[in-house]
Amino acid sequence: MKDENYLEYLRHSTSHLLAAAVMELWPNAKLTLGPAIEDGFYYDIDFGDEKISELDFPKIEKKMHKLLTDWKTFEKHKVTKAEAEKEFKGNEYKEELIREHSKDSPQLTVYQSGSFRDLCRGGHIENPSREIKYFKLLSMAGAYWRGDEKNKMLTRIYGTVFPTQKELDEYLLMKEEAKKRDHKKIGRDLELFNINEEVGQGLTMWLPNGSIVRREIENFMVSEQEKMGYKHVYSPHIGQKTLWEKSGHWDLYREKMYSPMDVDGVEYLVKPMTCPMHVQTYNFRPRSYRELPFRIAEIGSVYRYEKSGELSGLLRVRAFTQDDAHIFCTPEQAVDEFVSVFNFIQKLYETFGFENYTVRLGVRSKKEKYLGNDEIWQKAEAEVLKALKKTGAEYVVSEGDAAFYGPKADFMIKDALGREWQCGTVQVDFMLPERFDLKYIDSDGTEKTPVMVHRAPLGSLERFLGILIENFAGNFPTWLTPVQAKVLPITEKHLDYARSVVEKLKKENIRTELDDRNERLQAKIRDAQLEKVAYMLVIGDKEIESESISVRTRGQQDLGAMSIADFVARVQSLIESKSMEL
Image (cartoon, rainbow, N blue to C red):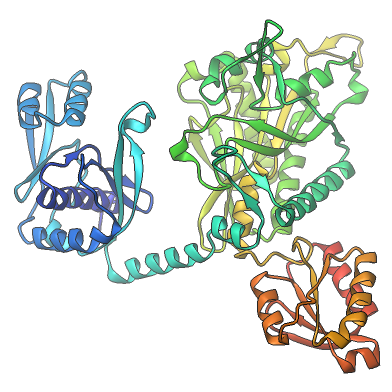
């Protein structure tokens, strides 16, 4: 029976093999680090003035297979700092690692397989020549040394490896399918969004089609939350630095915040979160226990610093919008409010077609990262655990994933390809109400401190939309589709009736466009399918004579002729029910 870490060891071992092959082909290259990662491995390499590309991958893979014949095992050698420095002299990256790791131990380890030796802590397979068979180099990217933009840009080569050919083939097939679903490509093809270098990295500009999808989601969220008693507000994009000092963000979240700006001699910051703004809304006037729970919601933009190498389309940006809300309640109400949010998130995910998700409970690890004392944290974690038990949901505990002011439950959803994404979150907070001296008058006339529940069911709208685009491969359900119907007259003589159909559908709030180009019908149908229009309405002599439309779905299903009224009823029913069907 293989060790539970076998796959990690296999991947780390293959990163050594990649490094060895590179050094055979480019002897002047300098190796840095090559860890195993979730789906494979990578190695960061300084090639100096040498230029390599993914076209070199077959050559590297061939060399890897050739070297394997002599890789019978991984030999562990203990070396002193001086010995390590002598062996890796001239490689400033290894020298830095040697200085760093020798602080903790007088001895370092070097692992050797064949004639290749690398500075390494270990974690390898026993028989590389027999076990490393099914690998593939995947891609290349730039990566700063130690992830610091002030350091040199290195070349990162990604690869993957599996115990069997079947597993490798399945993974590569999934990768190909993921390419087809790439939200950046679909976003361009369907004109959903644009991230322009002139505007700035990580800053999304929503194009008309993408704005429709986003607005439909926002309207849905506002409507659903109003039914649950949430009051919607707007807050400014900047606030005085002192506000963020009081909240604790400036001390504990500063690496994600942008530098202060001077406004009339006062320092301001763009907001990374809306929490302190909503606190001020609660604190606008004295509150009674009768007003609690007091639920404040906002579709609000926030700004957080992300390194350029970490940016990825809509999935990781620097400016994004949250479906944010904060609930101010009595301690006795906290569990029920948490459960209510939890149930709402579950309902939302079902609406958007996500039925496979898990819950991760983030708790403290290093105490210096967090506000408050042990007593308050134990109380907060007890409340969250009580709430999770009440939901009946399964969850995993993850140390170090708490917010700096309290424990949180994150929803990890799986998309159509089985990829996992962190989206919604709900958190219990005893800290900020104390730091801002929030009060309410209880039934006995005394002042009490409320509990604060933070929640963002979808998380970042940008990330959620990126996930949706890839999950649906751009084939949004009818209620989200930018163009729900496209009217296709067969010839020019059918234009007048086609225009009247467009006007009738628009009056019924069905997003409709007319294709009045002088093109063959098949070309119009093909283009409408490429645009992922939900319905194509063909207009010819028969349709004019019967005052009907001939309906085809995006999935090429021919629904035949129907009246305009019947089509309107069909589409409006799908929109109203937020159905996943066409």
